[in-house]
Amino acid sequence: MLKRLSDGVWLVSTEHPPGTRREEARLRIRDRVRAVLADELGLSVEAISVVSQPGQAPLLLIRGLSQPGLSISHELGFSLAAINLHGPVGVDLMRMQAGTDWQPVARDYLGPEVTARLLATPEYQRPWAFALAWCKQEARLKCHGHRLVEWALAPTMAAPVIELDLPYPYVGAIATP
Image (cartoon, rainbow, N blue to C red; front, top):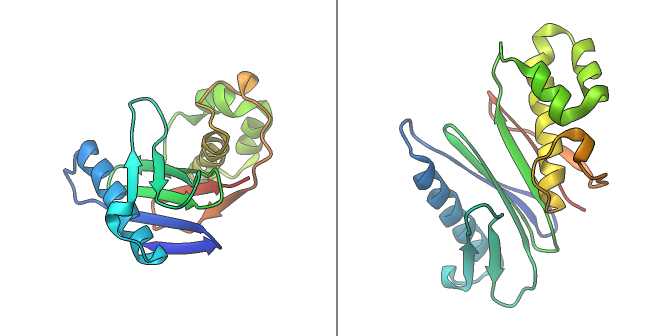
């Protein structure tokens, strides 16, 4: 899937067959990002690089552009990348699952207000609501260059976040400054 969200902002995804190892999924989405950008920008694939260092967000290098943003998220069977030619971007993806023990995670990472909203959500909608709240928080953190921390330690972030229209059972969000 390729979706242009606004001028210079794209969402790129790849589906992976069962049994795809994480390393292969990482390579596939990076290759897809390079191919899409080459086509969209009229450049050769060689003019675009995705540089990865363990424990750090991937860095997008495009000949002739300074500081484009790239954010990537993976789930079983699906990878998602957000590109912003004008600056930072954050994206997160989650495979919705019913019956997960979401409350301790929400309390620790999303905080009491979000946890209370989730508890007030009808039970049949909670897996989706939890996944969306999680993805929004992760997307904001990634957009601002922060790693996941418990809610009390998380910085205040003003990046607007948009829910993504993804195939079931995936939920996702993108944040841009």
